[in-house]
Image 1: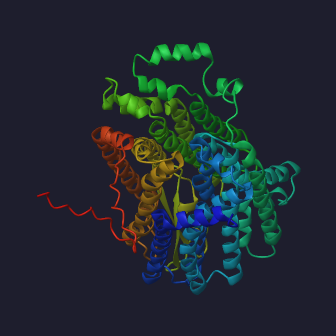
Image 2: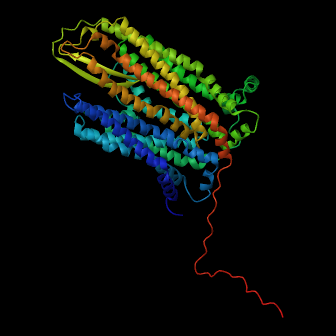
Image 3: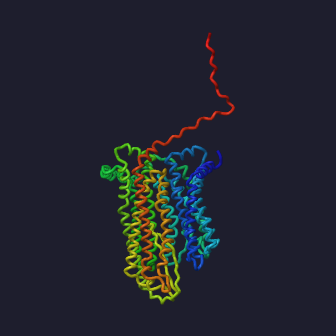
Length: 621
């Protein structure tokens, strides 16, 4: 057999896919838009003190986005590649030959890494512009490139390892996400807990295994354990790759009785509860019962809610410690991560029923029953609402309570601070700190105005009723945007599930079109366009900005961003709902009866004369 035959075949297939070119083009376009926005700021006077700060901001933005792409590659590219082959029954045919596990796994790794590496490769040249702007050294640039490539390899290897152990797509996605979270945040969190308990400085021991910590040390100043962390990360990646090569020849078979016992009882309800659930839901809507049979989805959502509530209670209990406002900021990050996990779970679950229905023929069976299309679609929608409404309500309540508690803590700190000295007239400097995005996708633009001699009393003194009202409005806007995003993810996820081959592909398309692409557009509009329009109206004269504009600047920008998010989600819901109700039957019929293309006529082989019929004999006299 040809050496590395699977590698050659997989690379040829991946090179012919349109997604390979689209992903590379999308990565370059996103980086180009961000770089153009930063360079636009240099032309309108935002870089009066030099372009170094803008270069550092552009480098941080592009590099963190690239890290998110690198870590997400394993979740969407390799988490289901081997388990899909198991479900289709094609993986066993490969092991009937003299192929080894190394050949199969290496072929999958190189084929899937091609798209992820191309996306990073499109960003690297634009990332190099920061070397010209300043604020970034060549050592930081090249170390960051190495950290991103290493994170891509570790993520792909983790997805392959989980895919070798899994057979179901949803289990593979959930386990890969859990493993990536453990690799990315487990080590730094453990070292931080040890440092707090021992009241000592942070000592990166387990953090060396984290691709996120390696990325942070790449752009840090001074001596950092970058090379040791890179060695540890590569060791973890190659260990996962080696384990996958060893496991895949032994785990591709479907063993008898593997779905029985405690695993089935955990995945589904116990027999008496299953019977009660069937009696209660089957008469209402059969699709509602089909979507609610498995209870692991609700267990996952409840797990995210429990983590969020536990973090809120722990932060509230320790808010009088030395952490203070920093503790609430850390909890806000954890809450944002929980909401993102909820987005991912809802997007995956919305399209899973239709993806599986395409493969096992469930959709065709549903359409031959008297059940109308509208009842099929709305049955799945009601099942998703039934699954997440209660934990989502708890999450939003905790989110609002935590944001308000953080604001009160900030007010208490501000009121205990001594009054600053009087500002020097005419010595006003404006620092545009950029934009931050909360967990629901609402962009909040932060602008700080400083004077020589300290902040003004309105910026550092006690916060009044107007500031409290502004904080409440921002929190309510974030909650509304979260609910709207979940509704849009549900409807658009059902549509992509009807048009996708795998659950991971359906989830990726849903997140890209509903969240990622609009996030870039809204961030660009809120972080660049709105400040350019509002800052000239802030009254930046010798006396500084007016207190009224300083109070309502962030609520105005957050409100505009929230309205854009709501309009975007409404458009996706209306569009996906109309497509589902109008084209559901046609899509299923196209799946059930694929189009058969006529074969071309067989070409006559050269050199062989055609066979002619014998000549007709003349009639007898």
